[in-house]
Image (tube, rainbow, N blue to C red; front, side, top):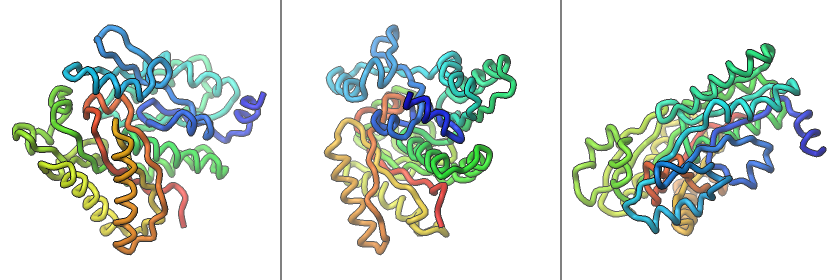
Length: 308
């Protein structure tokens, strides 16, 4: 009954694919529906991430089975249709936020599901947004949608504002090594910078839905510092103050490294004169880590949907 009351009080309902990488507890607290990706270690048996296999279990298998490269699979049309229908039947508009369409067909699956559902419910209000981001930054974007919903922003106004801010999103990150990037065939421009140089780690920027090379280094310290430098450059060039942005750290297998990095970033921002508040840290999920490996680490930044 409580869930039914919450559903009826919504100005719109928020759905995201599993690439948002938000913790289960937070998803439940914020009343978000997540349509999971699938992951497989044997190319035959695909498990729903977060439901049939936990993120921690997934990472442990990656670490324990070195040389075995897991694969991920996007949600299907029926997965999305099943997620849309309970809200459509109640007349509640839906905002569905998907991983950048340049990385996955998840957005197209959701668009196809929207068409299928509207055949039976032609008045259904379903907006499918190509977030142009992924993983932890997608999670931040979803939480900005939550802030709009919870402030009482009408459905169409919320969609307009989400479309306005998505181009501000950036991820500055590094990986443990090039192994997974090369094997997954997703390195593109990054390969031209570091792919053939033994022992070199790349620093990568995600913007406008694509990844771009932003530096290289031989040590973990150098590449993580470069990611921080890129964040500082972004803030310096912005016409907005840091209080207008949502920040987060994304980590892979090593939670302690993520905690230490977050503390270092916060300390550095304050030393540079920024009035930075503590910000969240989220674990990067299977959908992205199958391409980056278990030791991705980086920073996400996105303009807040509501600020002065």
